[in-house]
Length: 293
Length: 191
Image 1: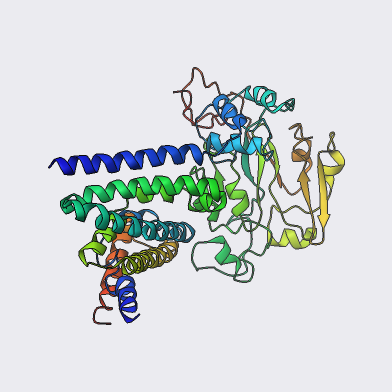
Image 2: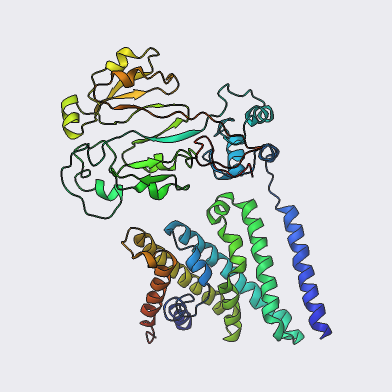
């Protein structure tokens, strides 16, 4: 009986000592800045910065892979982070980004080449003659983005186009990376004007494929007072693209667009006040991180 | 040589640790959602099982048997495995950050994997030599990896399948696991 006690105690003690020694010997030096930045961050691990938790964001900042102002719930934390990193913060104080769909070709508006009845996956649908829609640039509508969204912010609407719930979207960009057609794009929440088309074909071809397609008339480009919208071309053709840095939400292009391709969405005015508020899913500026509880 | 071959075939197919001996069910269901993480878990388990086989065999033969306290086997082995996983984690973290990132969260998870303890005890029960214990452990770990990878492949396909609502999620996974277990019964009599 006594032998059993002693031998187990001795074994435990030996393992304990070995682990303690190994802990010292194999200690990994972590950049102290990571820890001090992590202490500054709110610790909600909401993911709105696009990194796995606050720890991941802190490590990315120190590694130089992330800016100082990506923390939405953190508020004015960016200047303090910049202090630690020995730099000055950018003037742009961390506006929250949300995903925008650059396509409006739903069931009613787009025309179809054939009826697709395979498995519900955009990549699978695209393998069949580049998808069922006549427009080969637009949203396939099989909802691959709804499956990858880690926050459940994307649902398929009645038009078989994804609808992004601005109150749930944290701007992590997973859907943008996974969209095979690249029709999802991140834009700041204050940006209200969006070109809902990605079709780069010539005006008539585009119009035949979809009633709300961009017809490359360049009326938006000519009338924009800020030169924020341009019809940009490449090898495949061209389409109107907004430079969100310059856009002031004036709505001139929305009024001028003859194809009703450019849309102005409702503004979001209230700002997140983590200290004294409850998560409010109706407030589109709330990342629903739960920090305010 | 032939004995080793029998041990390997027996451990991977006939007495597959998950599908026939029902050990390590928790990671089998928990980590089989994605193929990449299933492979990561498999590698980590193989690594730890091989090390645990050697250490537990030595503890049994050099400590427990001479002192006549073989009945403390389970507690002693739990102690050994828990410390071993901690130790291995520290060493890997220091020496190979890439491997550490690849194994990620699965390494500490193995501490509570009953398959590791189970195989350590089976090795002693069957009075294997040190070499046979090592081969048996690695073969069992490969069997575990095989079951995990097969399951992950099936579950990735199930994601796109049209499953009745009441069976979605865990129910269909359990049915799948049961069918795989029945399929592995077919290997009985292979040797």
